[in-house]
Every structure is written in C-alpha cells, then in structure tokens.
Length: 175
Image 1: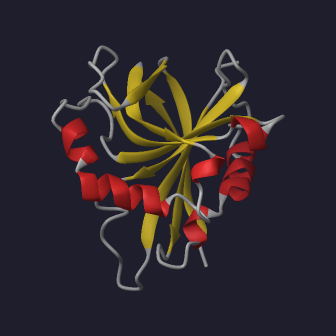
Image 2: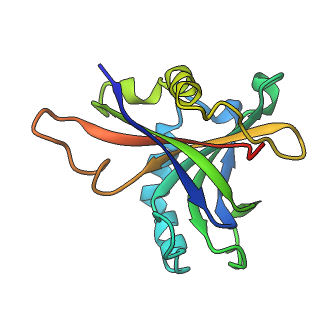
C-alpha cells in the first residue's frame, strides 16, 4: 500500500518543459506504454543533451494539466523534462513555458509494480491543504499544472522492501 511520507514546498525558477503531449485518447489504462515508447526511441537522451537547469532536479516528468471543471475534455499528459526557459525545442517535441513559482511536493512511497503510487492524487491534494498549500496556480486557460517527478535514486532504486518514492508535485498560487 502506498503512503505519503513527506510533504514540503519547493521553489522553481522560470522553466521550459519540453516533451510530447498525450490526451485521454492515448490512455490504455495508463500511459505506461507511452513511457516504454520514450525509452525505446531514445527521446529522453535527446533532451538530456540540451543541458538541464543546474538549480533544479533534472528528472523525467509526467506533467499533467487540466481544467478542473472539465477534466475529461481538457486533460493533458505530457512526458518530458524541465529545461532552461530559452532552450530551443527539438523537432518532434513541443513545450510549455512556466513562470517562476512554488510547488507543493509529496513523496509517495510504495511499490511501483502494483501501481498504487500512481493513484494518490486526492490524498496528495488533502496533504497539501493540511500543510497550508491549498491554493493551486492555474494558467490563462484555468488549467491546474501538476506532475510526477521520477527522481533518481528515490524512484530508480528500491529499498529493502521493494519500495520506491515518487514525487508528486503541484504548482501553488502565491496569493
């Protein structure tokens, strides 16, 4: 069973998220098959050559955004990485420019292979609210941005019980 083991606030500089966008139409249970496509095609290697921002964790990201009033029609799931804001976007990729701001971070500990760490959105939202981080930032289209950060070694190396830690993050409003 997955559990939230740490909650904190982190500040990010202005960033450019570069990746590829998927929608609910691309979902097959989840987006694991899209991640496999990324690894098979070496798409992360192309982004890693662009020199990530030294001031942040340069992990692989599952970046999501949607309008909470119309999740079904506005949900986007992006796979990619954060890079400096002036980074040129390689052919075949797209981007989202993000302003400097704070994020709430939950560390979710559990087994990756049973999928339990991926179903903790509501629990993380409740934890952010408990820790005074309940005002979430939206963009000019009223979409909230949140993401899974696959930090190495927290996510890539299992502990003695076979658990990993997934970072679940959401952009916070400064109001």
